[in-house]
Length: 157
Image 1: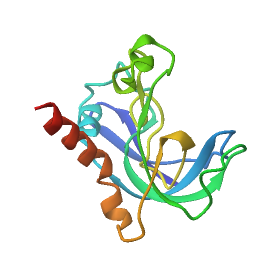
Image 2: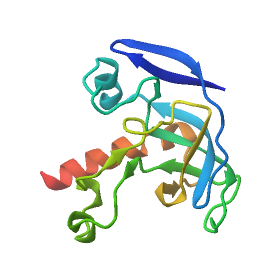
Image 3: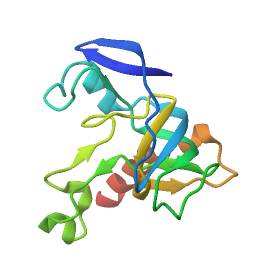
Image 4: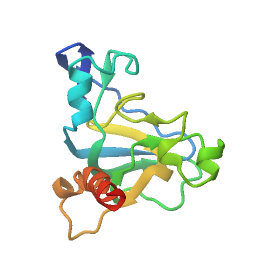
């Protein structure tokens, strides 16, 4: 399956990704849409080479449909329409325990520190999913993550 792969500074390739069967607690999504974020531009310019591991599939502003669920996943099923919260926190540090996992000192971002959503089939933790209403197009669903960032920024201001 095709994927957008960061190769090195100012070089993206159309590469191939192999669908990964979901492990326990994971789901595999058929990605419908993936936006291009400012973070993706920084990756393209080589500014995040200290975090990416080329060749790396980038992208984290996504929407799609669940294709397969792993063992133990009960809240989701094939056919569910979703978007992904792309941050992976440790969950055990004082920052996470205080309710601030988005600033965890061990924070990882899907599409930066781990393979991202610019691929047809993407396997992610089921705990990072948000259900999309049927009335919302998948194209608009891919805008949920940047909208959430904007709302957070406005709330802080």
